[in-house]
Length: 459
Image (cartoon, rainbow, N blue to C red; front, side, top):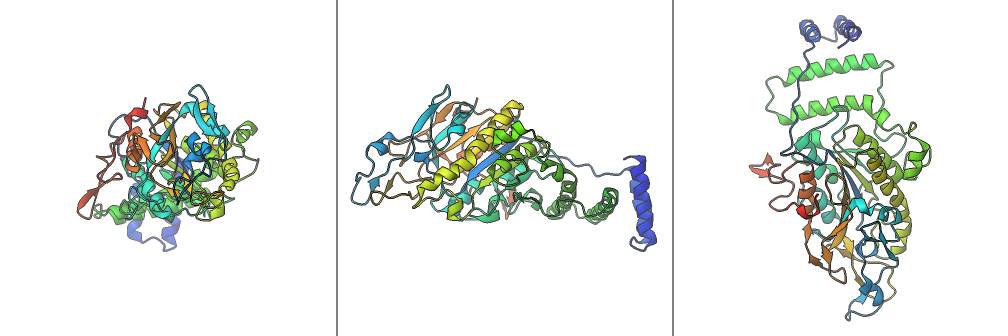
């Protein structure tokens, strides 16, 4: 603490005392704490073993992206398009061509040419299987491990397991222009202390309400907050067993710190024109998935542990749900293709992809057949779909698992939602079986009683 700051705080404390705001009995304690620089020491949890990833950027496409139109090429469907499979089903081929990319030759459809160009850094899983076939259950399932009961989200578990790298920013943020299926439960902390709940960031001119401090002088606000912190710590003495109280006090401190750190983190004015072009972001823009991706990189640089980027909400014209309008995929894909590829290239150029795990997923895929010829849509399909991971010890340029020739069932190496979660935690140095929290008389974990680490995709 500098002498000038100490003097200012002492002056403010004496002023508040003189005005009757502080009881005289507290004055000597405040000044003594100020003189001794008695700042509470905070300890942070440690990973179970050496991590490959320091942070996660989790890209979630709301609505159920069709695997057979994006990352899982099925020539059989194309060759038998509009032919009857049985009296109730007709084969539906993809409306987009697939091409091989990079040295690995990973097949990706023409919806994602930019993402295809960085597939040598990613591993595509073509054997994902969700635990529920409706949007709500599948979305909260992949986020929380449960499709039926309220549970802490994956980002909250990561925050609980590893703590924060930057006290002035949340450990877990969700950048979402709207609410996906399941709403805030996807970044909620449920029975974990509230400190670990994700902070929603809404793209726009003010992504976080009250982001700027309200006093004319930062010094005045800092003094006022220091006083509040002192009183909170006094109240906490003798109540250390109350984890919720400790977490709430810590959340107040983080909120105050965000007024110092957040404005700079969201200020893109110093980003070069080349960087903006890499993401496909227009100068001065504060919305769109390109903005979300560039802000994610900046938050990752500043120590945020888990950053989720959500594309779409529950509105059918803004998400990937395509029961009757697959042609909207052209525009939806254009909105995210270049920004996602730009994010991977940017992280790699900065040396950050080595310890940043990038995850792309959705809640489920779409059916390989429809009821009638000429149908321009597909139904929900949780039995098999595709996701991919990149960076932080993931074997790039490979595919894992496979669906059958129709894209209807897992043919080999199923990866459940819990396997997916266990693997993400593993790269962060967390054993999914040991990361537990005692609640209602039992130990809970993200993967419940399931899950295995998919070691085959790790380097």
